[in-house]
Image (cartoon, rainbow, N blue to C red; front, side):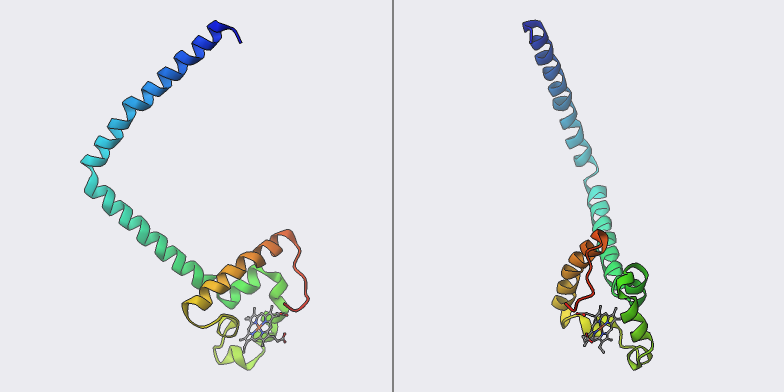
Length: 128
Ligand code: HEC
């Protein structure tokens, strides 16, 4: 690389750095000015995130979800649909999840691997 070219690149870098340096205080000013609004926005986003997570945990635990997306489970879902358990409102998670919040966390943790098997088509019908 020629000296001139190098100098040009260094100049460009300095310019880019200056742009960031000029921009940063403006960001900080903006944050200072709108502190309260930003805190409220953050709180709303956290609440929405929590609500979404909560809804998704429920939705992905429903028998309909098990059947809709995980066709590997269709025989189990059909057998459950024709059982006393479905008539009495005992669904999959009541037998397949452990107790309490840790049962849900564990089930969702293992569900990641089931999802991976589903996507890669490596799901076997052998008992777990
Ligand atoms: C009343 C309790 C109960 C309910 C409700 C229930 N299961 Fe099961 N399930 C079991 C038991 C016990 C086994 C293991 C016995 C067996 O393999 O026959 C099993 C086995 C399975 C298996 C096979 C796992 C393996 O290791 O071979 C799958 C998949 C499954 N259930 C999915 C579901 C789905 C999906 C639902 C809801 C639509 C559901 N189950 C509802 C008790 C239940």
